[in-house]
Image 1: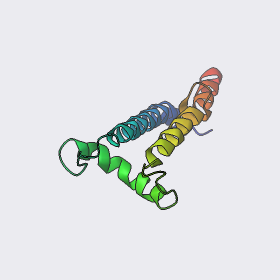
Image 2 (image 1 turned 90 degrees about the horizontal axis):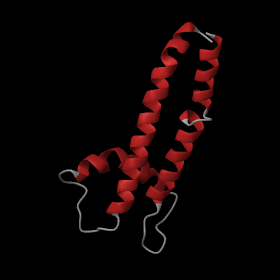
Image 3 (image 1 turned 30 degrees about the horizontal axis):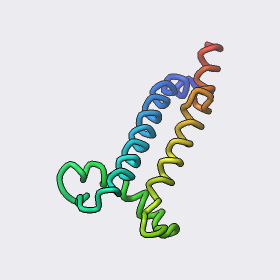
Length: 106
């Protein structure tokens, strides 16, 4: 492993964990917002939730239609982001294990 990669691995681990956690939280908020159809996601504070999540949801909506009039794409993305976070930066995640190995060697 290159020295540059070893030096940047802790930062990458932290940033990736934060980004994936933030995305999971935003998708959870999108699920809660589906309970309130009168709220416009195009105005005010709600725009901060809609802007980062809508590109993911729009792509998924092309493949998965609403079930019984309910958009389930945020639920799918909560699962995907949670799984990705666990596989990459979780306690037994790939990047976590590489980071542990490099600290034991160094």
